[in-house]
Amino acid sequence: MKGKHIVLGVTGGIAVYKAVEIVSRLKKAGASIHVIMTEAATRFVAPLTFQEISGNPVVSSMWSDVKQWQVEHIALANLADLFVIAPATADIIGKIANGIADDMLSTTVMATKSPVVLAPAMNSAMFLNPVVQENLKKLRTLGYSIMEPEIGSLACGVEGPGRLPEPENIVQFLETVLQTCDVLKGKRVLVTAAGTREPIDPVRYIGNRSSGKMGYALASVAAARGADVILVSGPTALPCPSGVTRHLVETAAEMREAVLTEYPNVDVVIKAAAVADYRPRLVHSHKIKKTGDSLELILEKTPDILLELGQLKKQQILVGFAAETQELLSNASEKIVRKNLDMIVANDVTLPGAGFNTDTNIVKILFPDGSCDELPQMSKEEVAGVILDKIYALLVKSI
Image (cartoon, rainbow, N blue to C red; front, side):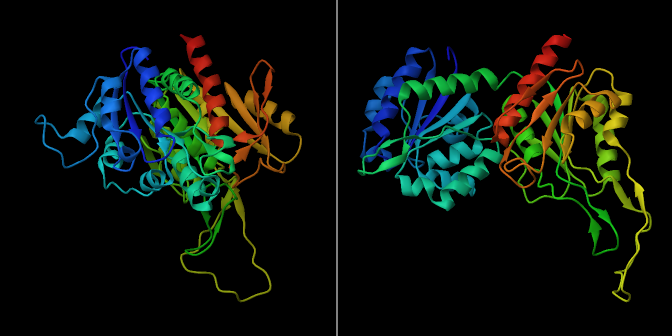
């Protein structure tokens, strides 16, 4: 924490009083704290309290008198090594998730490039509301760190999730975020995600069930850890994670071209995309009419991008994925050798919580020496964190 500039956003909830102690603990740890309060937050605790503890002016309005010739929300956004909102109400979560910037806090957080941590605190029914949960899911996908609220007795008299964690635990969480946010700084990481579509005619295609969630989680977490991330993605409805450069492709051939263009200049490649293994030999220029009882398609193999990368590999760390329905370990072990990989992430897509279009995954991480790390069911963001921990260890070992 020492020497770090932390911007703390405080929103209007009963848990505002805990934010005072958060500022105190961060200050004692050597950080410089700059507090932005919403108007609602000032109804619970006076700005003077945060000003006296932080030693810095508190900002609560976009329309106050100019103290210096610098746009204040941009100055704070650029200053931040870490941006924290605690407590984070449903209101501010919804604003950030949907691009609304109508006060000093929402405007500043939109402008920052630093890691952003949200600590939600609200009534249990509000926290569990599908709209709030969808907004939190979207923010996780975009690279925001979410500290889950505690379960306990709330000010409204109910028992359940929604309680702001204790300041001591929040500060520990922030220390962990700061420790990891720069570990991949200076590294270029290429991630592929989602499935490819191989056209039959202008209307139809051959594809697969991949949503791209695992690859997007990897891109998001890698960017949060300081990497320069290039994401080569097949078709998906997922938004591009914050701080990531995305190239959208459709076919296996297009993905191969994009990957090979970037490959010489990257340090790490994570091939999480579900690339189609076959494509129609003949692509019809017009829609095929339903004129008979059957339609015959002749399929040919698509290029094996991962195999080609393994053959061309020089300094890169090369990570593959194996989505299997049977003989998981034997199939993954064969791939790691044949394709010259540094590690492979294998999952049985028939298991509940591990298949396509889920928010969780159950994986095994295999290495060329035969070792294997088995992970329990986790969110895809958590799995991405473990995978990137392993990659970082390989990078350190290669120095």
